Amino acid sequence: MAKSKMFGKDVVTTQELSVEEIENILALAVKMKANRYGEPYNSLLAFKTFIMFFYNPSLRTRQSFEAAATELGGHAQFIEPKAMRLKSVKKGVEVAGETIHDAAKVMARFAVGIGIRILETSVDNYGDGNKILREYAKYADVPIINMADDIYHPCQGLADVMGMREHNNNKPTKGKTLVQTWAKGALARSYCSVHESLLLNSRLGVNVKLAYPDDNYALPENIVEQAKKNAKASGGTFEIVKGDPKAAYEGADYVYSRNWFGKDFYEIGKEAEIKRASSDKYKDWICDEDKMKTANPGAKFIHPMPVDEDAEVTREVNRGPRSIVLDIAENRLHVQKAIMALTMSDKL
Ligand code: CP
Image (cartoon, rainbow, N blue to C red; front, side, top):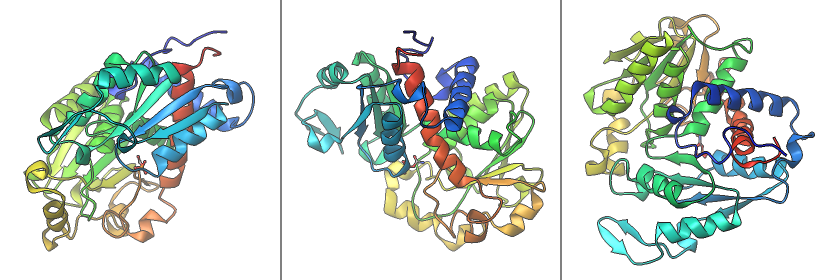
């Protein structure tokens, strides 16, 4: 029996992993995808339980983690805060209950790892979801895996990169260009997938162009500053293109068109954000064939899903030959199996 060097490690964001750890996860995910149900992978977590703790809903994350536990020979247990009696604060009101200290320590007695999803709609302020997740990580004696919080989504970022490489002749994407563009839409999306993509791709030497219509849709300064530092260290570039929905597409190898809410979201709320992001002012902020023609020939459309079709991207592009969104969605399973094996299995 052996453990990887990552055994016992929390995965909160790829920014807190070394490049070697990131490459190890991706390399194992590729092997697991090629040998999905076979030995030795199908028993790495035999008889072990992984807890999936969801404050917010999900399609891909829940199903891919549950399938991952099964395919590693273990079991995934789904829980929600409403099924527990946790101490909490919502809209400034304290609800009495069990502390995170006790809940984390008890859950760690049952499971080899705990995944947590906690997005902006479950907390009062930007960053509070990440703080709560880190509090679980502080007290749990098993790895905490971030299944998307209000800042980061490491599993999504890794699945994106795995898909981008698959569609680059299975080669690293250093030197390729990614356009990360804001899009209109009616879903008032979280920052987490976009942040993770910016941080991870800039770390891996991808040239990143971040596009958005106006300063209200600028991303938090510390994330942008970190992405710039990453690009400098990796030999990539980082550029911001403001105000023109098409300008950033020139030279793109990958286009990631995704809505995210404005800076004032926590004050104005979801309904007002959706009304604004769906207004005529932003009608051209959609990824379509015309804009994709400006990108490099063979450029791919990427997105973490769920897609707001005909708002973030046209149906033609989303379902067309340029789209690799389904491969990326499938890769959630493979990267999560790799993360679980590396952090939780004693049989590697
Ligand atoms: N991309 C992603 O995390 O999807 P879900 O919200 O459906 O889990």
